[in-house]
Image 1: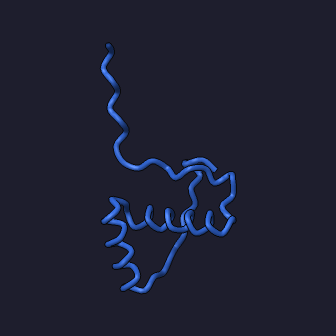
Image 2: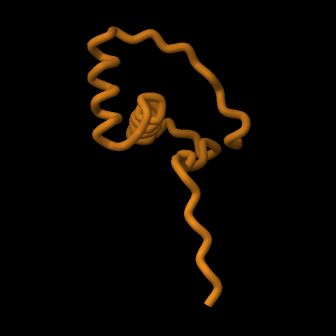
Length: 70
């Protein structure tokens, strides 16, 4: 599945759980959504259930600056 084909999921959370998740995500410089995906992928990998087709986590943030020619 490529980045353009990402699925959207509605998730209902207890407000206290969401607040804790948002704080944790902020501590790791991620959005709450990216933190949820990170944690789900880690749990799937630990359980031996992460599909090979899942691919790496998408890179977030600004793309790197091009290097000046030498």
